[in-house]
Length: 239
Image (tube, rainbow, N blue to C red; front, side, top):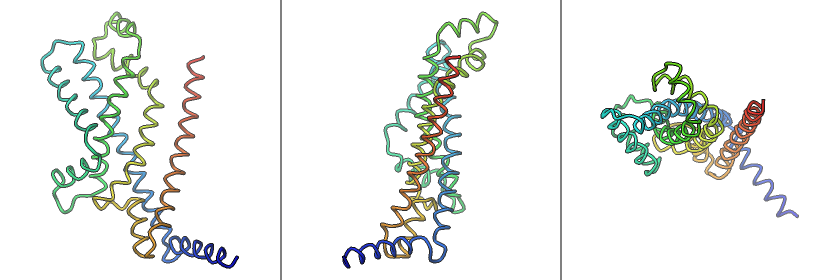
């Protein structure tokens, strides 16, 4: 009995030391803010890149314009390279090759890198959404006097985006978890701050478990919101 009590007391003290002394709980809060900022702006950048790349790829299959075909090839290379190489390697390359200044904000680097990475996956999601829209919608837009690009922007894309919103939500959830590797470029995100607290307490496991629990709560909340969104979209389709 005493052994069990001693074990429980030791666990309590470990987590207490990882949270309370020196207001260490603030480190988790500050790290969480950085994680959410990077995730939010990265997914916005990823959506912009993804939509542009998807439209170019779809357009390259419906035109004989040489420039569009070249852009389509470039987009294919971009998607292949980004999806075929590890995220951490991309992060280190962008940080060391592109952002070489000592004054570079690592949060900006992380946002750009995660945005570029996410863009490749979003592009395929958007392209699938565009291809899922009935071909008659394009013909209807052209019959109204719209050119191909205006039809794509005003008629096809809005329907495609509505259909792929759940998939984009899943991409955001994945992105939140992937930002944990940003600590390799000295971004003080949730994971990095948990490691710092572990170095202060000489016990790394409790801070990492706390960080893992926070990530889990974020994912559960986002998944819940995504489920609500999917149900509302389904009701809208029935009406």
